[in-house]
Length: 511
Image (cartoon, rainbow, N blue to C red; front, side, top):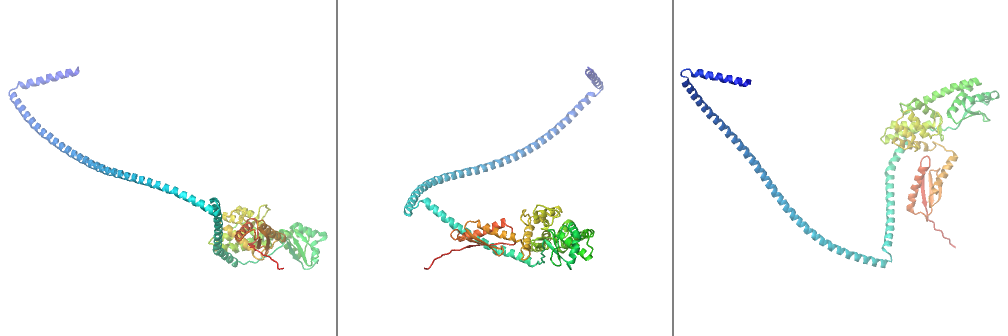
Protein backbone atom coordinates (compact mmCIF):
# COMPACT_ATOMS: atom_id res chain seq x y z
CA UNK A 1 0.00 0.00 0.00
CA UNK A 2 2.79 2.38 0.91
CA UNK A 3 4.67 1.55 -2.31
CA UNK A 4 1.59 2.43 -4.40
CA UNK A 5 1.25 5.75 -2.64
CA UNK A 6 4.94 6.53 -3.18
CA UNK A 7 4.70 5.61 -6.86
CA UNK A 8 1.71 7.86 -7.30
CA UNK A 9 3.53 10.74 -5.69
CA UNK A 10 6.56 10.25 -7.97
CA UNK A 11 4.34 10.17 -11.09
CA UNK A 12 2.65 13.36 -10.03
CA UNK A 13 6.05 14.97 -9.46
CA UNK A 14 7.36 13.98 -12.89
CA UNK A 15 4.16 15.15 -14.56
CA UNK A 16 4.38 18.48 -12.82
CA UNK A 17 7.99 18.87 -13.83
CA UNK A 18 7.29 18.08 -17.50
CA UNK A 19 4.36 20.50 -17.50
CA UNK A 20 6.63 23.16 -16.13
CA UNK A 21 9.29 22.73 -18.78
CA UNK A 22 6.74 22.43 -21.64
CA UNK A 23 5.15 25.64 -20.67
CA UNK A 24 8.45 27.51 -21.29
CA UNK A 25 9.37 28.88 -24.76
CA UNK A 26 11.97 27.13 -27.08
CA UNK A 27 11.72 24.04 -24.99
CA UNK A 28 10.71 21.85 -27.89
CA UNK A 29 13.64 22.86 -30.03
CA UNK A 30 16.08 22.30 -27.24
CA UNK A 31 14.41 19.05 -26.47
CA UNK A 32 14.69 17.85 -30.04
CA UNK A 33 18.31 18.93 -30.22
CA UNK A 34 19.10 17.05 -27.04
CA UNK A 35 17.35 14.00 -28.35
CA UNK A 36 19.37 14.13 -31.60
CA UNK A 37 22.62 14.61 -29.73
CA UNK A 38 21.73 11.71 -27.46
CA UNK A 39 20.87 9.50 -30.41
CA UNK A 40 24.13 10.38 -32.18
CA UNK A 41 26.16 9.71 -29.09
CA UNK A 42 24.27 6.47 -28.52
CA UNK A 43 25.03 5.44 -32.12
CA UNK A 44 28.75 6.11 -31.56
CA UNK A 45 28.73 4.16 -28.33
CA UNK A 46 26.85 1.37 -30.07
CA UNK A 47 29.42 1.18 -32.88
CA UNK A 48 32.30 1.20 -30.39
CA UNK A 49 30.68 -1.54 -28.36
CA UNK A 50 30.05 -3.60 -31.49
CA UNK A 51 33.70 -3.20 -32.48
CA UNK A 52 34.86 -4.26 -29.01
CA UNK A 53 32.52 -7.22 -29.01
CA UNK A 54 33.72 -8.21 -32.48
CA UNK A 55 37.36 -8.01 -31.39
CA UNK A 56 36.68 -10.10 -28.31
CA UNK A 57 34.81 -12.59 -30.44
CA UNK A 58 37.67 -12.84 -32.88
CA UNK A 59 40.21 -13.26 -30.05
CA UNK A 60 38.15 -15.99 -28.45
CA UNK A 61 37.71 -17.64 -31.81
CA UNK A 62 41.46 -17.58 -32.39
CA UNK A 63 42.15 -19.04 -28.96
CA UNK A 64 39.56 -21.75 -29.50
CA UNK A 65 41.05 -22.56 -32.89
CA UNK A 66 44.51 -22.88 -31.26
CA UNK A 67 43.17 -25.18 -28.57
CA UNK A 68 41.32 -27.24 -31.13
CA UNK A 69 44.49 -27.43 -33.25
CA UNK A 70 46.58 -28.52 -30.22
CA UNK A 71 44.01 -31.12 -29.28
CA UNK A 72 43.89 -32.37 -32.83
CA UNK A 73 47.68 -32.68 -32.82
CA UNK A 74 47.64 -34.65 -29.57
CA UNK A 75 44.88 -36.86 -30.85
CA UNK A 76 46.86 -37.37 -34.03
CA UNK A 77 49.96 -38.35 -31.99
CA UNK A 78 47.95 -40.77 -29.90
CA UNK A 79 46.46 -42.26 -33.03
CA UNK A 80 49.95 -42.65 -34.50
CA UNK A 81 51.21 -44.40 -31.36
CA UNK A 82 48.21 -46.68 -31.33
CA UNK A 83 48.78 -47.52 -34.98
CA UNK A 84 52.46 -48.32 -34.21
CA UNK A 85 51.49 -50.50 -31.28
CA UNK A 86 48.88 -52.24 -33.33
CA UNK A 87 51.49 -52.86 -35.99
CA UNK A 88 53.97 -54.26 -33.42
CA UNK A 89 51.29 -56.44 -31.86
CA UNK A 90 50.34 -57.80 -35.23
CA UNK A 91 53.98 -58.60 -35.94
CA UNK A 92 54.37 -60.33 -32.59
CA UNK A 93 51.18 -62.27 -33.08
CA UNK A 94 52.38 -63.42 -36.47
CA UNK A 95 55.76 -64.40 -34.96
CA UNK A 96 54.04 -66.32 -32.15
CA UNK A 97 51.85 -68.14 -34.61
CA UNK A 98 54.91 -69.03 -36.65
CA UNK A 99 56.80 -70.29 -33.54
CA UNK A 100 53.75 -72.22 -32.43
CA UNK A 101 53.60 -73.92 -35.77
CA UNK A 102 57.34 -74.68 -35.58
CA UNK A 103 56.94 -76.05 -32.02
CA UNK A 104 54.08 -78.28 -33.11
CA UNK A 105 56.21 -79.55 -35.93
CA UNK A 106 59.14 -80.21 -33.58
CA UNK A 107 56.80 -81.93 -31.11
CA UNK A 108 55.50 -84.21 -33.80
CA UNK A 109 59.06 -84.98 -34.82
CA UNK A 110 60.08 -85.69 -31.20
CA UNK A 111 57.09 -87.96 -30.69
CA UNK A 112 58.08 -89.86 -33.75
CA UNK A 113 61.68 -90.13 -32.52
CA UNK A 114 60.52 -91.17 -29.02
CA UNK A 115 58.48 -93.91 -30.59
CA UNK A 116 61.57 -95.13 -32.38
CA UNK A 117 63.62 -94.88 -29.15
CA UNK A 118 61.01 -96.90 -27.22
CA UNK A 119 61.15 -99.61 -29.85
CA UNK A 120 64.96 -99.62 -29.68
CA UNK A 121 64.80 -99.73 -25.88
CA UNK A 122 62.49 -102.74 -25.93
CA UNK A 123 64.84 -104.47 -28.32
CA UNK A 124 67.85 -103.65 -26.08
CA UNK A 125 66.03 -104.92 -22.97
CA UNK A 126 65.31 -108.18 -24.74
CA UNK A 127 68.94 -108.47 -25.84
CA UNK A 128 70.16 -107.60 -22.29
CA UNK A 129 67.89 -110.22 -20.78
CA UNK A 130 69.15 -112.78 -23.26
CA UNK A 131 72.76 -111.88 -22.43
CA UNK A 132 72.06 -112.08 -18.65
CA UNK A 133 70.49 -115.53 -19.08
CA UNK A 134 73.46 -116.63 -21.17
CA UNK A 135 75.95 -115.28 -18.54
CA UNK A 136 74.03 -116.94 -15.69
CA UNK A 137 74.11 -120.23 -17.60
CA UNK A 138 77.87 -119.86 -18.19
CA UNK A 139 78.76 -118.67 -14.62
CA UNK A 140 76.34 -120.87 -12.75
CA UNK A 141 75.20 -117.83 -10.65
CA UNK A 142 72.02 -115.81 -10.63
CA UNK A 143 72.10 -112.02 -11.06
CA UNK A 144 71.24 -111.44 -7.37
CA UNK A 145 74.01 -113.77 -6.21
CA UNK A 146 76.52 -112.06 -8.49
CA UNK A 147 75.34 -108.67 -7.22
CA UNK A 148 75.80 -109.78 -3.59
CA UNK A 149 79.31 -111.00 -4.32
CA UNK A 150 80.15 -107.73 -6.03
CA UNK A 151 78.73 -105.72 -3.11
CA UNK A 152 80.78 -107.77 -0.62
CA UNK A 153 83.88 -107.23 -2.70
CA UNK A 154 83.23 -103.47 -2.88
CA UNK A 155 82.61 -103.36 0.88
CA UNK A 156 85.96 -104.98 1.61
CA UNK A 157 87.69 -102.67 -0.85
CA UNK A 158 86.00 -99.61 0.66
CA UNK A 159 86.88 -100.76 4.18
CA UNK A 160 90.51 -101.19 3.18
CA UNK A 161 90.61 -97.76 1.54
CA UNK A 162 88.89 -96.16 4.55
CA UNK A 163 91.37 -97.70 6.96
CA UNK A 164 94.26 -96.53 4.80
CA UNK A 165 92.71 -93.05 4.65
CA UNK A 166 92.31 -93.00 8.45
CA UNK A 167 95.92 -94.08 8.87
CA UNK A 168 97.07 -91.30 6.52
CA UNK A 169 95.07 -88.74 8.51
CA UNK A 170 96.45 -90.03 11.81
CA UNK A 171 100.01 -89.95 10.47
CA UNK A 172 99.53 -86.42 9.15
CA UNK A 173 98.09 -85.29 12.51
CA UNK A 174 101.02 -86.87 14.31
CA UNK A 175 103.48 -85.04 12.07
CA UNK A 176 101.83 -81.64 12.59
CA UNK A 177 99.71 -81.36 15.73
CA UNK A 178 101.75 -83.79 17.82
CA UNK A 179 105.00 -82.10 16.85
CA UNK A 180 103.69 -78.66 17.79
CA UNK A 181 102.11 -79.90 21.02
CA UNK A 182 105.31 -81.65 22.06
CA UNK A 183 107.29 -78.50 21.34
CA UNK A 184 105.04 -76.39 23.57
CA UNK A 185 104.93 -78.95 26.39
CA UNK A 186 108.68 -79.63 26.33
CA UNK A 187 109.50 -75.95 26.20
CA UNK A 188 107.14 -75.31 29.14
CA UNK A 189 108.77 -78.08 31.17
CA UNK A 190 112.29 -76.93 30.35
CA UNK A 191 111.56 -73.37 31.40
CA UNK A 192 110.15 -74.36 34.80
CA UNK A 193 112.20 -76.11 37.47
CA UNK A 194 111.06 -76.26 41.12
CA UNK A 195 112.19 -78.19 44.14
CA UNK A 196 110.08 -81.04 45.39
CA UNK A 197 109.43 -81.59 49.10
CA UNK A 198 108.03 -84.89 50.38
CA UNK A 199 106.12 -85.04 53.63
CA UNK A 200 104.50 -87.95 55.41
CA UNK A 201 101.73 -88.16 57.96
CA UNK A 202 104.32 -88.10 60.77
CA UNK A 203 106.94 -85.59 61.85
CA UNK A 204 110.07 -86.60 63.71
CA UNK A 205 111.11 -84.18 66.50
CA UNK A 206 114.79 -84.52 67.36
CA UNK A 207 115.99 -83.99 70.95
CA UNK A 208 119.45 -83.67 72.44
CA UNK A 209 119.12 -86.54 74.94
CA UNK A 210 116.63 -89.11 76.13
CA UNK A 211 116.29 -87.29 79.45
CA UNK A 212 114.05 -84.74 77.71
CA UNK A 213 111.55 -87.53 77.00
CA UNK A 214 110.75 -87.89 80.67
CA UNK A 215 110.20 -84.16 81.07
CA UNK A 216 107.91 -84.16 78.05
CA UNK A 217 105.89 -87.06 79.46
CA UNK A 218 105.70 -85.42 82.89
CA UNK A 219 104.49 -86.86 86.17
CA UNK A 220 102.02 -89.67 85.44
CA UNK A 221 101.94 -88.48 81.81
CA UNK A 222 100.14 -85.19 82.51
CA UNK A 223 102.44 -83.09 80.28
CA UNK A 224 102.07 -85.31 77.23
CA UNK A 225 98.31 -85.57 77.75
CA UNK A 226 98.02 -81.78 78.00
CA UNK A 227 100.14 -81.38 74.86
CA UNK A 228 98.06 -83.91 72.91
CA UNK A 229 94.82 -82.28 74.08
CA UNK A 230 96.02 -78.79 73.15
CA UNK A 231 97.42 -79.66 69.71
CA UNK A 232 95.26 -82.63 68.61
CA UNK A 233 98.41 -84.55 67.72
CA UNK A 234 99.40 -88.01 68.89
CA UNK A 235 102.88 -87.90 70.47
CA UNK A 236 104.72 -91.21 70.29
CA UNK A 237 107.58 -91.56 72.77
CA UNK A 238 109.28 -94.93 72.26
CA UNK A 239 112.75 -96.41 72.38
CA UNK A 240 113.91 -94.54 69.30
CA UNK A 241 117.04 -92.69 70.46
CA UNK A 242 116.91 -88.90 70.52
CA UNK A 243 113.62 -88.70 68.61
CA UNK A 244 109.93 -88.20 69.32
CA UNK A 245 107.31 -88.93 66.65
CA UNK A 246 104.38 -86.54 66.09
CA UNK A 247 101.52 -88.25 64.25
CA UNK A 248 98.48 -86.50 62.74
CA UNK A 249 96.77 -86.34 59.37
CA UNK A 250 96.65 -82.51 59.51
CA UNK A 251 100.09 -81.03 58.67
CA UNK A 252 99.19 -77.73 60.34
CA UNK A 253 98.54 -79.46 63.65
CA UNK A 254 101.83 -81.32 63.37
CA UNK A 255 103.65 -78.05 62.69
CA UNK A 256 102.00 -76.38 65.71
CA UNK A 257 102.99 -79.35 67.90
CA UNK A 258 106.56 -79.33 66.58
CA UNK A 259 107.08 -75.61 67.16
CA UNK A 260 105.43 -75.78 70.61
CA UNK A 261 107.68 -78.69 71.63
CA UNK A 262 110.70 -76.83 70.33
CA UNK A 263 109.89 -73.76 72.46
CA UNK A 264 109.04 -75.85 75.54
CA UNK A 265 112.23 -77.89 75.30
CA UNK A 266 114.33 -74.79 74.67
CA UNK A 267 112.75 -72.89 77.57
CA UNK A 268 112.85 -75.91 79.89
CA UNK A 269 109.57 -75.07 81.65
CA UNK A 270 107.21 -77.90 80.75
CA UNK A 271 103.92 -78.11 82.65
CA UNK A 272 100.23 -78.10 81.59
CA UNK A 273 99.60 -74.35 82.07
CA UNK A 274 102.77 -73.44 80.20
CA UNK A 275 101.92 -75.96 77.44
CA UNK A 276 98.53 -74.36 76.80
CA UNK A 277 100.06 -70.89 76.71
CA UNK A 278 102.83 -71.89 74.30
CA UNK A 279 100.47 -73.83 72.04
CA UNK A 280 98.10 -70.85 71.77
CA UNK A 281 101.02 -68.56 70.98
CA UNK A 282 102.48 -70.94 68.39
CA UNK A 283 99.09 -71.48 66.76
CA UNK A 284 98.77 -67.74 66.29
CA UNK A 285 102.30 -67.61 64.85
CA UNK A 286 101.50 -70.42 62.42
CA UNK A 287 98.34 -68.66 61.28
CA UNK A 288 100.36 -65.51 60.67
CA UNK A 289 102.99 -67.52 58.85
CA UNK A 290 100.29 -69.13 56.68
CA UNK A 291 98.99 -65.72 55.65
CA UNK A 292 102.53 -64.46 55.09
CA UNK A 293 103.34 -67.52 52.96
CA UNK A 294 100.23 -66.92 50.86
CA UNK A 295 101.12 -63.26 50.36
CA UNK A 296 104.72 -64.06 49.49
CA UNK A 297 103.57 -66.69 46.98
CA UNK A 298 101.18 -64.32 45.22
CA UNK A 299 103.82 -61.59 45.10
CA UNK A 300 106.44 -64.00 43.73
CA UNK A 301 104.05 -65.09 40.98
CA UNK A 302 102.82 -61.57 40.26
CA UNK A 303 99.19 -62.35 41.07
CA UNK A 304 97.18 -59.49 42.57
CA UNK A 305 93.64 -58.82 43.74
CA UNK A 306 93.03 -62.15 45.49
CA UNK A 307 90.57 -62.27 48.37
CA UNK A 308 92.33 -62.47 51.79
CA UNK A 309 90.72 -65.85 52.51
CA UNK A 310 92.09 -67.22 49.22
CA UNK A 311 95.54 -65.93 50.20
CA UNK A 312 95.25 -67.78 53.52
CA UNK A 313 94.17 -70.99 51.73
CA UNK A 314 97.22 -70.71 49.45
CA UNK A 315 99.42 -70.38 52.51
CA UNK A 316 97.88 -73.53 54.02
CA UNK A 317 99.05 -75.46 50.97
CA UNK A 318 102.56 -75.33 52.37
CA UNK A 319 101.55 -77.87 55.04
CA UNK A 320 99.66 -80.19 52.71
CA UNK A 321 101.05 -82.87 50.40
CA UNK A 322 99.38 -84.93 47.66
CA UNK A 323 100.90 -88.31 46.83
CA UNK A 324 104.03 -87.12 48.60
CA UNK A 325 104.25 -83.92 46.53
CA UNK A 326 104.08 -80.64 48.46
CA UNK A 327 100.84 -78.96 47.41
CA UNK A 328 102.17 -75.40 47.42
CA UNK A 329 105.21 -76.33 45.35
CA UNK A 330 102.93 -78.27 42.97
CA UNK A 331 100.57 -75.26 42.62
CA UNK A 332 103.46 -72.85 42.01
CA UNK A 333 104.91 -75.20 39.41
CA UNK A 334 101.52 -75.60 37.73
CA UNK A 335 101.01 -71.82 37.71
CA UNK A 336 104.38 -71.23 36.02
CA UNK A 337 103.71 -73.98 33.48
CA UNK A 338 100.27 -72.50 32.71
CA UNK A 339 101.79 -69.06 32.15
CA UNK A 340 104.44 -70.40 29.78
CA UNK A 341 101.98 -72.54 27.83
CA UNK A 342 99.39 -69.74 27.60
CA UNK A 343 102.06 -67.38 26.28
CA UNK A 344 103.06 -69.95 23.66
CA UNK A 345 99.41 -70.27 22.57
CA UNK A 346 98.80 -66.52 22.47
CA UNK A 347 96.51 -66.41 25.54
CA UNK A 348 96.62 -64.27 28.69
CA UNK A 349 99.49 -65.66 30.83
CA UNK A 350 98.39 -63.81 33.98
CA UNK A 351 94.95 -65.39 34.00
CA UNK A 352 96.46 -68.80 33.26
CA UNK A 353 98.94 -68.40 36.13
CA UNK A 354 96.09 -67.39 38.48
CA UNK A 355 94.03 -70.44 37.50
CA UNK A 356 97.05 -72.74 37.89
CA UNK A 357 97.80 -71.44 41.39
CA UNK A 358 94.18 -71.85 42.55
CA UNK A 359 93.40 -75.18 40.87
CA UNK A 360 93.94 -77.29 44.04
CA UNK A 361 92.47 -74.96 46.71
CA UNK A 362 89.75 -77.56 47.28
CA UNK A 363 92.35 -79.84 48.92
CA UNK A 364 92.82 -77.51 51.93
CA UNK A 365 89.26 -76.72 53.02
CA UNK A 366 88.42 -74.94 56.26
CA UNK A 367 85.56 -77.40 56.71
CA UNK A 368 85.11 -80.94 55.44
CA UNK A 369 83.14 -81.42 52.22
CA UNK A 370 81.88 -84.51 50.43
CA UNK A 371 82.48 -82.92 47.04
CA UNK A 372 85.60 -83.78 44.99
CA UNK A 373 88.37 -81.27 45.54
CA UNK A 374 88.01 -79.79 42.02
CA UNK A 375 84.30 -79.03 42.43
CA UNK A 376 84.80 -77.78 45.99
CA UNK A 377 87.65 -75.54 44.83
CA UNK A 378 85.40 -74.14 42.08
CA UNK A 379 82.73 -73.30 44.68
CA UNK A 380 85.33 -71.58 46.87
CA UNK A 381 86.54 -69.51 43.88
CA UNK A 382 82.95 -68.57 42.99
CA UNK A 383 82.32 -67.59 46.61
CA UNK A 384 85.24 -65.14 46.53
CA UNK A 385 84.18 -63.61 43.17
CA UNK A 386 86.78 -65.09 40.85
CA UNK A 387 86.03 -64.79 37.13
CA UNK A 388 83.92 -67.54 35.47
CA UNK A 389 86.71 -68.82 33.20
CA UNK A 390 89.06 -69.26 36.18
CA UNK A 391 86.32 -71.01 38.20
CA UNK A 392 85.66 -73.33 35.26
CA UNK A 393 89.37 -74.12 34.89
CA UNK A 394 89.49 -75.08 38.60
CA UNK A 395 86.39 -77.29 38.41
CA UNK A 396 87.22 -78.94 35.07
CA UNK A 397 90.86 -79.92 35.59
CA UNK A 398 89.72 -83.48 36.45
CA UNK A 399 86.88 -83.51 33.86
CA UNK A 400 84.18 -83.27 36.53
CA UNK A 401 82.51 -80.33 34.78
CA UNK A 402 82.46 -79.37 31.11
CA UNK A 403 85.28 -77.13 29.90
CA UNK A 404 84.01 -73.76 28.68
CA UNK A 405 87.26 -71.84 28.14
CA UNK A 406 90.77 -72.45 26.81
CA UNK A 407 92.22 -71.99 30.30
CA UNK A 408 90.66 -75.29 31.47
CA UNK A 409 92.65 -77.66 29.18
CA UNK A 410 95.84 -75.68 29.86
CA UNK A 411 95.41 -76.10 33.64
CA UNK A 412 94.59 -79.79 33.18
CA UNK A 413 97.67 -80.42 31.04
CA UNK A 414 100.01 -78.47 33.33
CA UNK A 415 98.63 -80.24 36.41
CA UNK A 416 99.39 -83.56 34.71
CA UNK A 417 102.87 -82.40 33.71
CA UNK A 418 103.70 -81.37 37.28
CA UNK A 419 102.28 -84.57 38.76
CA UNK A 420 103.76 -86.92 36.17
CA UNK A 421 107.30 -85.61 36.43
CA UNK A 422 109.56 -88.44 37.64
CA UNK A 423 109.97 -88.26 41.41
CA UNK A 424 107.22 -85.70 41.89
CA UNK A 425 104.67 -88.06 43.38
CA UNK A 426 104.45 -91.47 44.94
CA UNK A 427 101.47 -93.76 45.13
CA UNK A 428 100.36 -96.21 47.76
CA UNK A 429 101.44 -99.71 46.77
CA UNK A 430 97.91 -101.15 46.91
CA UNK A 431 96.50 -98.36 44.72
CA UNK A 432 99.40 -98.79 42.29
CA UNK A 433 98.86 -102.55 41.98
CA UNK A 434 95.10 -102.08 41.61
CA UNK A 435 95.63 -99.62 38.79
CA UNK A 436 97.86 -102.07 36.92
CA UNK A 437 95.33 -104.88 37.38
CA UNK A 438 92.53 -102.63 36.12
CA UNK A 439 94.61 -101.79 33.05
CA UNK A 440 95.10 -105.45 32.19
CA UNK A 441 91.48 -106.42 32.89
CA UNK A 442 90.14 -103.57 30.79
CA UNK A 443 92.05 -104.78 27.71
CA UNK A 444 90.97 -108.39 28.32
CA UNK A 445 87.31 -107.45 27.78
CA UNK A 446 87.85 -107.07 24.02
CA UNK A 447 87.24 -110.14 21.79
CA UNK A 448 90.33 -111.72 20.31
CA UNK A 449 92.64 -110.61 23.15
CA UNK A 450 94.55 -113.54 24.66
CA UNK A 451 97.02 -111.90 27.08
CA UNK A 452 97.73 -108.45 28.52
CA UNK A 453 100.81 -107.14 30.35
CA UNK A 454 101.18 -103.80 32.10
CA UNK A 455 104.88 -102.88 32.01
CA UNK A 456 107.13 -99.88 32.73
CA UNK A 457 105.29 -99.05 35.96
CA UNK A 458 101.98 -98.83 34.15
CA UNK A 459 103.21 -96.50 31.43
CA UNK A 460 102.79 -99.16 28.70
CA UNK A 461 100.16 -101.83 28.12
CA UNK A 462 101.03 -104.69 25.79
CA UNK A 463 98.05 -106.56 24.33
CA UNK A 464 98.58 -109.90 22.60
CA UNK A 465 95.80 -110.97 20.23
CA UNK A 466 95.10 -114.24 18.46
CA UNK A 467 96.26 -114.31 14.85
CA UNK A 468 93.27 -116.43 13.86
CA UNK A 469 90.73 -114.02 15.39
CA UNK A 470 91.97 -110.54 14.43
CA UNK A 471 93.71 -109.44 11.24
CA UNK A 472 96.36 -106.74 10.84
CA UNK A 473 93.86 -104.01 9.99
CA UNK A 474 91.78 -104.70 13.09
CA UNK A 475 94.82 -104.45 15.38
CA UNK A 476 95.24 -100.78 14.46
CA UNK A 477 91.65 -99.92 15.37
CA UNK A 478 91.84 -102.08 18.52
CA UNK A 479 94.71 -100.06 19.98
CA UNK A 480 92.75 -96.84 19.45
CA UNK A 481 89.61 -98.28 21.07
CA UNK A 482 91.54 -99.48 24.14
CA UNK A 483 93.28 -96.10 24.48
CA UNK A 484 89.95 -94.26 24.34
CA UNK A 485 88.39 -96.57 26.92
CA UNK A 486 91.35 -96.09 29.29
CA UNK A 487 91.01 -92.29 28.91
CA UNK A 488 87.28 -92.41 29.67
CA UNK A 489 87.28 -94.88 32.57
CA UNK A 490 90.61 -94.64 34.39
CA UNK A 491 92.68 -92.02 36.25
CA UNK A 492 96.46 -92.16 35.86
CA UNK A 493 99.44 -89.81 35.79
CA UNK A 494 101.13 -89.04 32.50
CA UNK A 495 100.21 -91.23 29.53
CA UNK A 496 99.81 -94.95 28.80
CA UNK A 497 101.16 -96.47 25.61
CA UNK A 498 99.03 -99.29 24.15
CA UNK A 499 100.91 -101.80 21.99
CA UNK A 500 98.85 -104.51 20.22
CA UNK A 501 100.93 -107.52 19.12
CA UNK A 502 99.68 -110.07 16.58
CA UNK A 503 101.97 -112.95 15.72
CA UNK A 504 101.64 -116.12 13.71
CA UNK A 505 103.55 -119.18 14.86
CA UNK A 506 104.19 -122.31 12.85
CA UNK A 507 105.48 -125.30 14.85
CA UNK A 508 106.73 -128.61 13.44
CA UNK A 509 108.89 -131.41 14.82
CA UNK A 510 111.79 -133.29 13.26
CA UNK A 511 111.74 -136.95 14.21
